[in-house]
Length: 334
Length: 280
Image (cartoon, rainbow over all chains, first blue to last red):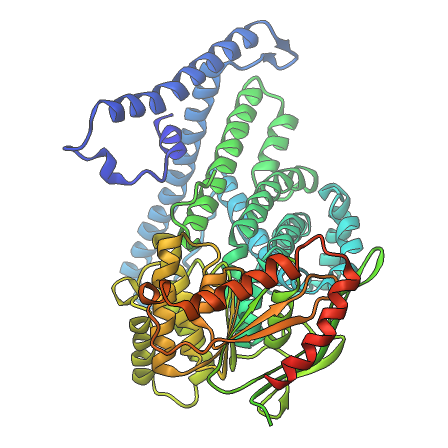
């Protein structure tokens, strides 16, 4: 939890923690910022434990915090075991081949590649890569389009009905279309990326385009009249105008959009993976559900917590980036 | 031919209730190097005149001619000092001026020359000590100084100042007025300044253009201020000439153009005054 507590205060200058200038107020403040989230967490865990004791499902007791922690350890163990197995296979292969070579230096040697079964952590990695790619593609489209429709009210009027119609579409509705289109269009003997990856990624992109696009447009349209007057008097060309005046003043709104988008992207991805059985955390949850062992619920809870934490981390990362690109370092960003 | 000619300018703005005529037949000829003040009650369209000269608004009738060319869009040869400084908050004072200088002198000056020119202009407004600070790190008066430096650095043919000191406290304002006079003595720019401060108008201007109340505002009277330069505000305080100019402007603003005055009277006066303005 200390990590989460730290993340709540990620922007405190480090110097405020350094030796000499810690006074009483600061100590109180730091204790507060650490202890309050801890208390909140403790209360949450208590309620969870109490509730879990009184719910019995067909797969056994509803998992409490301790069972979930245990399942998390199990998942780590499984991951290590799986990797160790693969390592062993390679070692055996090396021994085998060395023997062959010793007997006959000209012998034909085959180096096989062994794949490990996908573990929980592989699924996390797949989901993370997919969400980041989908989000990047969406931002790459949404920000320029947002700038253009923000600057010109006629393009805005032309495009806005489309945006407003596509925006509320659920990812699950997109999924069949995207699957069919990708299968039809993406035909290659030696595919660089798998079809399932593309399907998940495009679905994510389609759903998380809109908040960034709309917020960018609003931010761009809200550039102060005084500054556009300056730009006009200076006769700045379109690109310089966008770079020097529009973007810096729209940055807070753009990032509001980006943060909404990455949140949506993450939610959409899990749902899409569950539905389409594409590799990732969503598939892990669905497989565990279908598996129906007495450990399943605990493992699903682990996945849920990890999904939540990753969502939280993604948001914090966006905040850090915002802080990095924003000109106003003193602005309060939440 | 006049250097800057504002000729029969009228402008109408569309409103939900129909067209609103803000200016009606504004004509003014300005010589090179003149310092002109536009004074009038708020809402009389002073800023509209300035914005038309700047090219930010388009006149419905009539037009503005600068050195024989019609003005129909904004441009750096008519630099504007905005009332609320309008500096880009994400750039330092230096970078704000740099943006303007790069835009105007990109082809004619080398990098080193541009740097020197930027620093020279910041020096002119006494801002060398804080040129690498951002607008939120300096005071209101300093921001306005940077705004003036940015406008001067464009080497404009006409410098347009829209109530440049309106948002400042009295002491800072006096400081800046002195700076502007000093710069004006040095550079001899053609300046149009909007103000609602009578002392400021008399102190700084060669001519004071007094505007009637809107709607359909126009030029009421023009007053030539023939005080010797350089002017000193302390010495002028007891100068009878200065006080005569001052009271003349005050009389126009508070007797002839009281805000409650019926519209018809104002119109008659305008017609007589327009004749005298052509002589000026």
